[in-house]
Length: 236
Image (cartoon, rainbow, N blue to C red; front, side, top):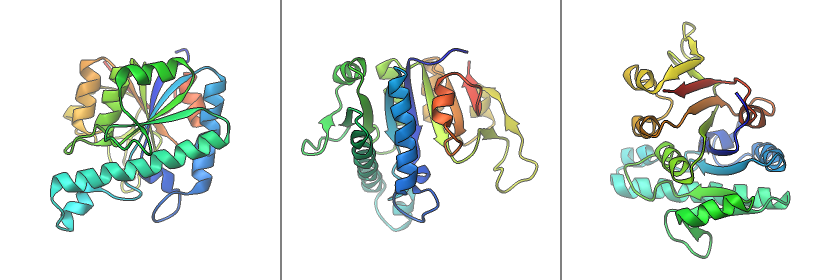
């Protein structure tokens, strides 16, 4: 498998925490930014979707008595915090970056417009898609699948804290088995909670491969974009 030209990288908010209990670990942010800088040097066109779980999770908000739609909007705002932090770190390294937000906040970010996003990519800018899909009841995984489809990405790369998709939680079960390849249908049928079912279904409909890999490994983002067989490939 050769290297990918245009990719959508999905980062979880939790991944940005590193070993902290809350917020953003500057060392993790630096390391991710260094890898992104290398990808830009190699000519990769890169869109990024970041979750917000290091600041706020909609589901946790519901448990605290916040109404579901409001909790989801709060989660979307948490993704904006992460997006601005990553943008700042990238621009300090000389990488032109644009934050495009699904919820308008013109003082901070450009509104998401598909054609504008594609133009930024063609000009070599890194795009960070903030605020999920802009709608409650959808996750940032679904936002990643949606934006990847809209910009014509060749693959969705989901960077997590585990090195692929397992039959069970590898942290809890010694019998957990790692899958190297899966079909979309297998992920849905086995209810493997690596991406939510809406995101997987959207990728299936558009024949968009998903690679789930360990974000924490050394230079793994660059390696997976260059076609190294890391993690688990979900395809048709």
